[in-house]
Length: 331
Ligand code: KG4
Ligand code: ZN
Image (cartoon, rainbow, N blue to C red; front, side):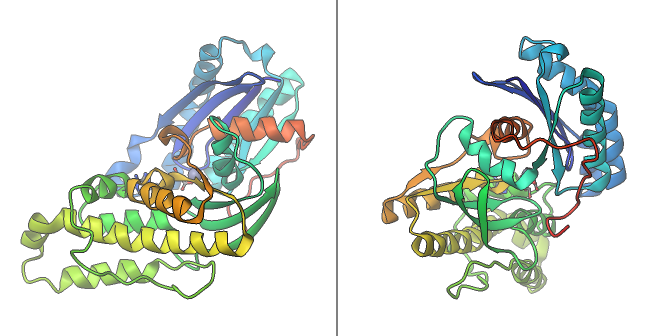
């Protein structure tokens, strides 16, 4: 079974091929056009997807050493994401399916982040996934293949959104998450105690208060620029501690509640070094297995769409040509 995976939910145009022998190619075309605006501009994202999607798909197929006629099904991100961006990928995928008379698979982007853990590994069911991206922060009890129970999620900003918005306050370019991470490794995480919200015993998150706290903290400094020049790394490290402490505390709650023996990290923020090392400590303390995708499969990519499509094909979870995109999980 040769699955062509296509991802276009946000600002990465990506294509990959996953076969019964595993991942064969994984191509990502990132959109630099958004940098100057400090965030993703939806209309520009759609146009950039439109421009690059065919080239990206062609490259993925070439690198896999196959041709389009060897593709057995196309898996495409159905949502959540930017409607215009999703439409480009979905319409392209439908076009390939119609022209080659092959089936379509509609992939939930958040599920795909979780199944990215199966590219290089085989996590044992049941497990808990801490799925942390730019748009979502969720704890999911994955009881079996596509048997998912949402334990809790963020009430406001996602963890990646918190990294990005706070990074912007600190003068870092978008997306700030990776840069905050890098700087944190050279800073003192105890420099300042930023607030950690909703630490009571549940599975929900809230990060918007942290962003406001950082804003006021910076405004309180007499010479803000001098303060940032002196302490940017320390502030990054303190912010990273505030975010990752909460994530890992809630993950611990979920492990204790579900009594699972495995945990997985998923989504762009699972690339974060502080989160990865705290999750390792948690796994050792709780005596559970920990799975984290390799860095290339943490942030948005099509390998995760292609492998999820492969799993869906095995389960017969095909879509029809009326498949519609959805922007949010609460569709
Ligand atoms: O999963 P993803 O690529 O896209 C969405 O589905 O949203 O996640 C992107 C998010 C961004 O907010 C980005 O800043 C964050 O993941 N991110 C990180 C790191 N790498 C990416 N945040 C903290 N540390 C990182 N190393
Ligand atoms: Zn994502």
